[in-house]
Image: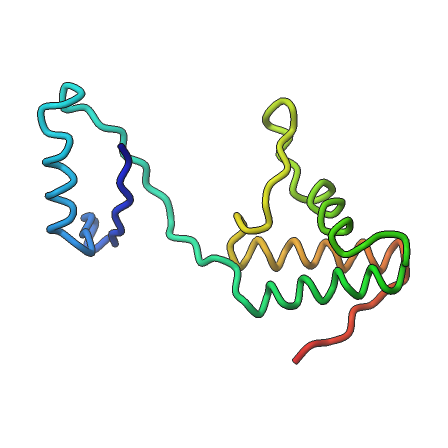
Amino acid sequence: MNFVLRAKIVEGKLRFLDPERYIKCLKTFQGKYANQLEVVLRKIRKPRSGKQNSRYWAMLTFLAEETQDRTKDEWHDDLRAEFLKDNSVYPPKIMSTTSLDTKAFNEYMDSIERLANQYYQITFPVVE
């Protein structure tokens, strides 16, 4: 059983955004598992935006039209394999673009732009 609770750090202390839910979750575990829990802390990530997603698929469509050697879906798979491969596991795992936060997704799209420019001399149109 897993629970995700959001909190913030105030004056060096963890403050849960929903303290009642925190207490309810603790009661769920009370007496079970010898009262031992694993606590994982991580920064709340801001998932990629709809605007980023639209830009990404526009880029892939443009690549497919300009190169005419792959579909946008094939570009999607090939670029993920190129830039989102996790080599820390065997066999290497290809990450999903949906797992990227806004910053990581921008970095991924920057990598695609560099590749397109370097190997195909393609510059993507600027989107306002």
